[in-house]
Image (cartoon, rainbow, N blue to C red; front, side, top):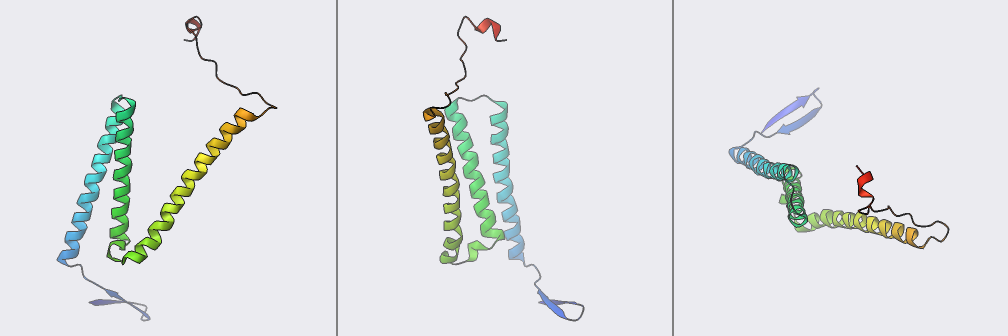
Length: 141
């Protein structure tokens, strides 16, 4: 182990990289690169092709799952959570999941409140867009 001295007052230990750490870096780079290439390929496929609603949503779900797996892998490797004990991991993951759940719940509540407000507001009538009928289609170009 080498020591680096800065100004004669602070000594920071410096570890030389070993073969195992180099293999781990290359493995991490390879895994993250493969997941990113798959995500980009699916994104390009979604952009270039017009799929039906079901397949379109399925591919978007795959991209979300790949992104979450990549985020988990990054956190476990670069933030060293993969080496920690289960209780420490849970103290980070559970509040994160609650935060995501709060965001989803607040968005759903806001949409519900907006729809109810528009539906039951007696002072202001609900404004709907007029749909084109066959006799009006000639003027909608």
